[in-house]
Image (tube, rainbow, N blue to C red; front, side, top):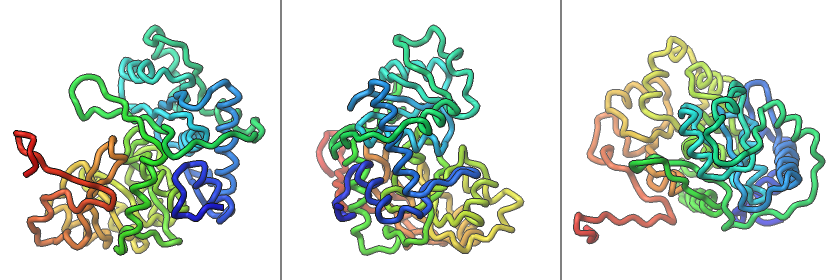
Length: 353
């Protein structure tokens, strides 16, 4: 078995953790829990089912739905075989769904709970005919598929296609490989800093949308660390409070506006946040008064994460020591580059400044 430091693919990580900690919780959503042994088996069955349906390395599948344990089973399983997952934002209009589906050429579209009308909503909008599979059918298919041998994808094989609207016009599909998704995470853990290390008793909350790197990326971080990923279908205060108080969550990623929503909720002051170590936030700087209130309420350390879809998420971190309740110049910055990241600042003439 490869050493943990040498792993670079979903297939390798799932195989490693299934051997290393088969009974350890890997994934949780609502009342459903899956150990690493079970997740290894389920994702291998996903890979087998997709190959059995005629898909091959480089083919696309898509997901329209909220965050779900089923989404991560499908994504991880497809990635094991080099089949590329393209999650589509559930809040988009059917016309926008159709644009992304047409752009991917996805052969199968999986839908989450509550999205039973997707086929009708897409009628007449697609330029190809993907098979549409609802969540109940997908779970039954995985359960009924025998695990078969398959060739695992390589480090440079594409596994994820996220759509980003960081430019004008239609969203652009950013194609990400195994190596893209795992190499920077591994480099970060080499830093001799507490907040880049994961203790073995930690758990990660996945509350941001899976069609965004801030959602799917947290699920990948949990897998890379061999820790439980606790999935919320969508952000809601009760779900966050329960995850921290009852399901052992020690860190999560959130946007400052959502932190404000948590603070204003009546349950916030009554929740035990003693296990919470780090709150990662991004998409905007944190207002100083909000930071003061959050430090007082949560007692956690704060890290600003800066990055983008094309960089598989975080490339810079503003560390806890720069989050001063009294304020400082550094809090206006995007932080320090992670190991493996090179940054240049260019002037209007294209020259480095």
